[in-house]
Amino acid sequence: MADNNMTVAPTDLRASAGLAGTLSEELDSPIRNAVETSSTVSGRLAGWSIANGLGQLGTGWAAPLGTLKQRLADTATSLNANADAHTRNEQATADGWSAKKDAK
Image 1: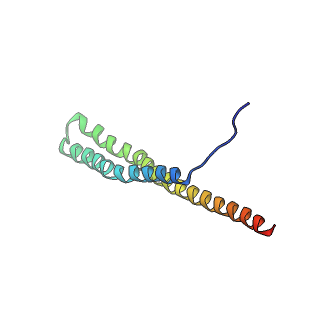
Image 2: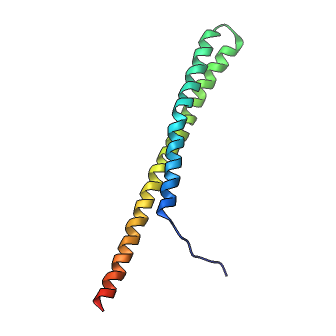
Image 3: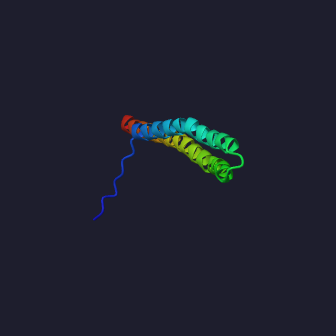
């Protein structure tokens, strides 16, 4: 028979949120640099056959990389919200049991 028990530790959710948030922040500079560099190099190589491809590389990757960065930031926010909800739920459950015990 399958074990259907699941434990959610808010501290683990917050740790994962911290990692996702850090990754999002750390991606900002490399993404910006990659897009700017490809654009700069493309401009410097005007007239060369590779120039257009480099320009398209930067503009083509800007949106997907920006989306990745935002999804990581959104994941961090969601994980923190989930951790907060679990903490509130655990406290409400503990308070409910405590009130029931005190009523006896």
